Image: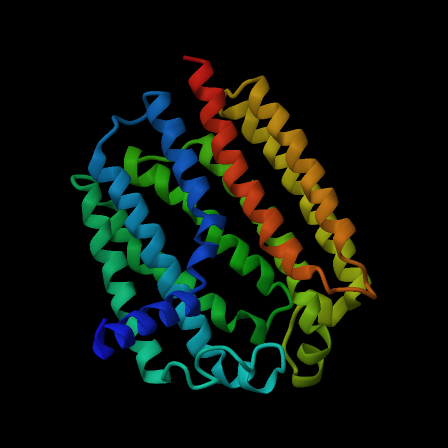
Length: 297
């Protein structure tokens, strides 16, 4: 392998690390589940171009939002010991390069909405949606509820998917959006507990920095309780069966376990609670949803 090929490969790996590409699994399964429900219920005719459009839009939108977050937070990250090793502060990637990457992925996101033609709504809504996604990066500078801006950004995945392939809106994607909103808000609060003291010292806003870690964990638990209520509502309005209801019970168990992992005086397992358990929840709900619909055929 040549030096140029090695450098190119390393650069690609750095950008994948920058956007934490593996975290795409937090939202993509919900977009796919929404599409499958729409196709299964005859709300939309299956088209390969729609499936490709969903995948492209999800990847590019999240990549743009994550890259811009790293660009916007580079000075904050550099001062925080936990984040000082991130790509821009550590010099692995340049600030200009990350901004360029953000612009390119943003353009690709907008262009990807053309896959849904003749439905033009995704194209018309692409820029407002993108601005909302990018706007999250500044939320913690003025609001302790920045966690729920992130949650609202991710909850757009089922709503946008339904609009893209049906041209309308219905209760199932709205109910699933509520699930995502309270689920993401809750686990982002848990994750933010790691930076509670730093955020307080530098004047950044978060629920842990305002309420303290114990109060924040209680807030996150309440959010996850509302997530489960929303999940039961989604089960009902989507017309899902017993298999999915069993999945709801499993999700409840996983959320309880997530909260048992993190204590006010011990945040050492916050990373496990953040990624591994929530990855199981998102992928698990997709697979259980598919199984439920398949056996209902």
